[in-house]
Length: 413
Image (cartoon, rainbow, N blue to C red; front, side):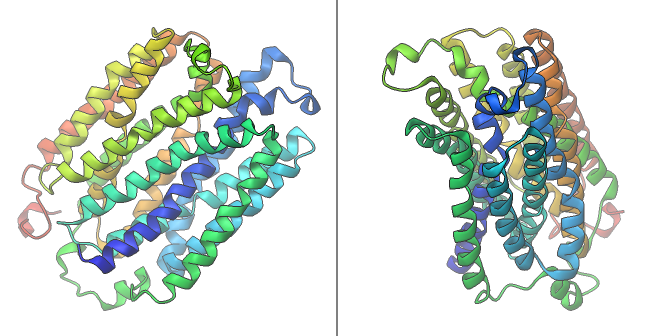
């Protein structure tokens, strides 16, 4: 891709990094929140309350993505990106203020609601300014910054908490990057000559090669995304807690337990950048489906192993899981652009993220209420196997449905 397109992709990807900082902000401090004396939560109920708080953030993060996609069709992606950033900063400020558990639930719901805007707005904007040939790599870069954001959340939390700050002050700090990036995006995007979807829709020819559709494949794809999203949320919401007893505390005597578990989680998630890059680098229009099937299949036994792992093995298994699992994200996002017409792309991205994050929002609740680790991770591994099988079906079903530049009219519904 040319330098102008690359700059735009990287700019939007910075907003992607930040949305995952917000998405995982609660997971980084959930043990501190539920043990806060002002909330008066019984010790026996802490994981259940933590799971439902995580659910209250992730549910709107998913279900409102469809609305964001619909709004993107009508008002443009650039405006929505600004609303997302300012809204998330305001929600983080409310979390900092939260005097009661009820207000904390409200702040998490609002944080998830505003964060839901990003993916249909940001990913669709990238898809409009790229071609089928360079789109996988562009979305790979986008995914790399997303993984950096996922990893940066625990690192940032660990750094802030190591200063003696409270979890409330952690949320106060999170108000700052959203406001700064909103200003930067507003100034930069106002000079970018990139059309919003409404303009694209009016100016594109009716027989455009990217206006073809394959709706049956799209439906199967969002099922895959929903199952993968459930696994993603169930594991990541409790990842710092999972890495709490790895036996590494003795190597870092001057680091608090609260900071150490976040540093470990951040290190593991940082490896997801490798998977995002490989997914974008290896993908070609006709290899997207088999690569997706392979990534999901290889991740399944690692998730199952997490149910048995103890001590140092927890670091090993999660470090292997992260790069393999995160390969699926640029592949799924590229396949959406392959299966749906340009004029409905924001809406379809919105639907995909609504189901992926919406169904996924129940992952923390499932993980919080399932105390048997083998059962918990066995179910999650099974969901990945089902997703891989559906991907193989897509590969077979679309064997003649190749890149938009080469497919024939007879191969398209």
